[in-house]
Image (cartoon, rainbow, N blue to C red):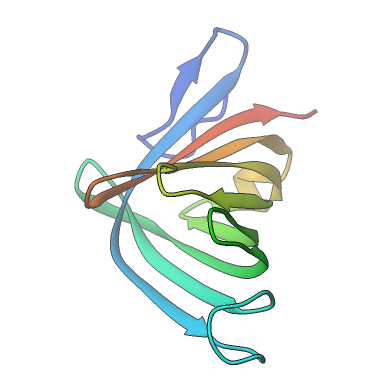
Length: 141
C-alpha cells in the first residue's frame, strides 16, 4: 500500500490509496494570446500550496491551454504536478467548465520517487472558497 505521508489512507483493501489536500495561497497568471480577449489558445499558469490537516505538505503547479471557448461551455487542457515530500504526481486531462460545474477529473499519468509506479485519477473539487485535491492512486506494478 502507498504510504508516503500521513494523509494517505487505504481504499477498497486492494493496495490503492487516496491522498486528500486542501489548497492554500493559490496564484494564477492569465496569458491573453491573440486574438485579444478571452479566446481559444489563451493560457493560465497556476500554483498553490497543498495542505493536510492544516500543515503545508507540498505544492501544485499547473499549466492550462483553453482549447474551446463558447458561450455556455469552456474546455481547457491541463498538465499539472503535485510535488510532495517523497516525490511528484503528474496529472493530465481536459477540464470542461460550465456555470454549475465545480469538480474536475484528470488522469494520473505517472510520477517520481514514491509515486513512480502509480496511475489513477485526480479530482479537483471546488466548494465555495475551499478547493480540495483528491488523488485516487493505483500501484501499476
